[in-house]
Length: 294
Image 1: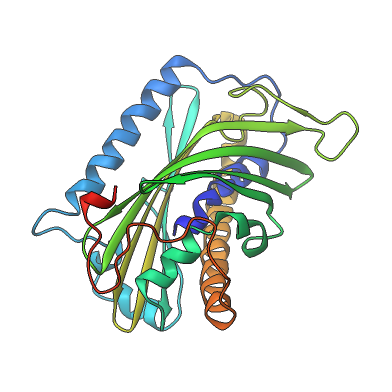
Image 2: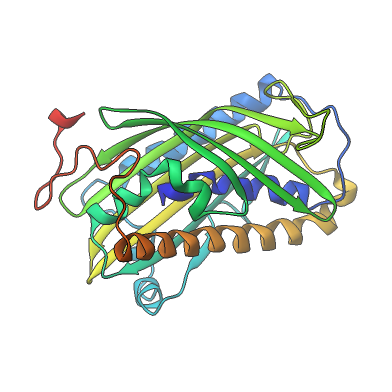
């Protein structure tokens, strides 16, 4: 779900969870070319889901997924190979997670999804700070500062996101978000703390994109998050150790974020806030949002 856009922190956790990599990784043009091509393909596949004869939800591509979700399970699976694809001097990570939020409406879930100022409360302790920067005409800009420590590697990242909503009809909605700036923070919390230039550092995160789908039915809302990230590659000598750890951390981190999302929606229902930081602009209860709203 869009509230978990920063789930791409899991990609950094995957890399941080390997033995410490050497410093000095830089994003190369050929790596960016492969990333742009992959992202265009993912966006095209999302548009295909809207065509007749295609499933809007990944959940509906398998007969038993929706039943498992309604029983309270959270499903996580790789969307490419074992979850990663090697490109020149980099790795693309692509995973999907899904959950069902019972007794929720599309409007109530979107209200929480757009409440960027409260991400730091909903998704702690990984998210240290979050802030809405702009919200207008179905588009949002926001920032997230997250911190993680895995196997003695302390990874801190400040990211700025741009996101756009795409209402399909009165029951379905999707959102695409991408990072416009990602900076590693060296020596976070210490006197010599400093922000590294984008594209430099340990290569925990270079580029991020998410596609989040929502559908209201069966007495609740299905939420799916495709998380796509670009990081530096893992040296050949470490892959035998790193690959299983990458997959395990990917699943557990994405599942945890989705669980926190569901808890955030439930908490909002118990104690409604005065207003979400970005609201549900463009949503019309009982009817679909239209192009006039965007």
